[in-house]
Structure formats: C-alpha cells, structure tokens
Length: 118
Image (cartoon, rainbow, N blue to C red; front, top):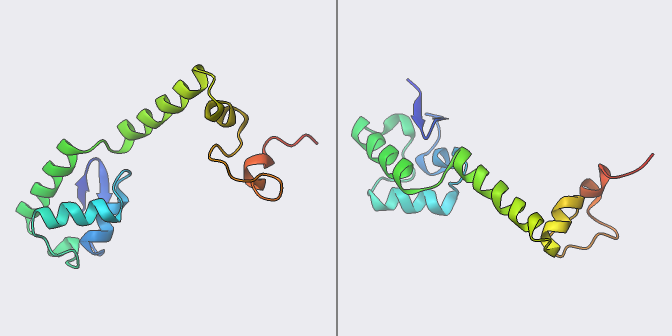
C-alpha cells in the first residue's frame, strides 16, 4: 500500500524525515517541524507509522502549506511579475542569466549554453 500525501507517493522504506521531503515545498527543516508538532519520531519509517499518524500528517500538510502545483504556479507568477515591471531581476530571468549577482565571466556556462549562436 503506497502512502499518498498531497498527490505524491511517499516511499514507505524511507525514514519519515526524508520521506516528507519528496513533496515539492517541504524540505528537511519543515519536515522536522511537522513531525515534532505531532510527536512522531523522525527516524521511524513510513511503513511503521499507524494509519492515524499518516492521516494527521496528511491533514496538516495539505491544509497548511502551499505545495506542488500551487507553489510552482506561484513561483512562475512571481517571475512573470518581475518581467512585467521591467526589473533587473526580471530582465536577467528573461535573458536566461543568473539573477542573484553571480559572476558570469568564468561561471554560468549552463545558463549561457542555450543562448550561444553557432
């Protein structure tokens, strides 16, 4: 029986702390925060959790946090807004270059690779 939370299959053989990070929008710190709130040991495997523990995790995660598609859509809208107001960061996103001040003289080859003219 596969455990599904927020429309994502959670691997049952992984520890709870790691398994929750398979959901886009939940990292290690948020995973530990959620498990601590419900006093679930983070070293227990998902297959060892009871049905009630899984249901409480599911309710908490799905009701409290923006996850998966909603979070990705929100990020895309933020980038689109930056482009529309013609900010510097928006222009960097538009041209496919690093937006956070990284150097591009020697690095950023992967960002610049798709812009090369042959």
